Length: 243
Image 1 (cartoon, rainbow, N blue to C red):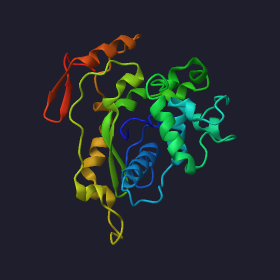
Image 2 (cartoon, rainbow, N blue to C red):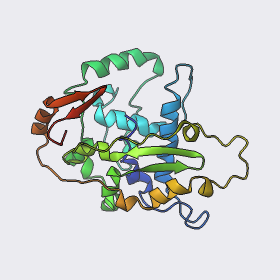
Image 3 (cartoon, one colour):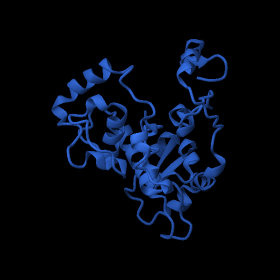
Image 4 (cartoon, helix red, strand yellow):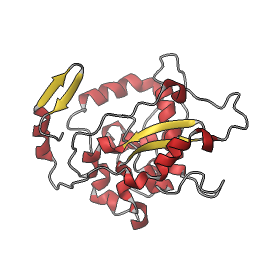
């Protein structure tokens, strides 16, 4: 889940800008917000976690655009930024009904899930053209960085949601435990630009990290390729080079 759901964030806060290109001059706020949210989603998989941080309105917006059956009031007008659709009437109620939401997701997990919600004409008409500049960057495979936090964005693994054929991607990047658990405690004065130099370099070269993107007008019949699977150990592979 964590590697695909907020490419729309780039429509709100920008997809570009290099890290540390002159201290305090240029900063990619979009990827920074994603890095924090991804880290928080990972942290809260611990059963002992009782809270979660990050930009949760984006998480809720992602869920409601793809699973509109979760919304208590779904007939709200589309606006830009897209998260503002839920600013008047909240889409999801209090967390004491979480079991009900889980049941709803299970019951609608097939036909009820909208894989490409932003391609709806009612949505595209409210999105300004400037928001789609460098839209190919939504599919990159690159690190997201916020000071001590480094998380990986695997947009290349979900390009069917962008109207493209999903070829079998490379193995996902697994960051080591020390990096993933890094905090700022006791690290006063640390130059995070030096600390994460290799990842910042990868980000600054993000234009070279775009996967092969072949558009297809009709992706429905591509579901047939899911039946041709081959299992090796605990991993499933799709025969034919696409899935």
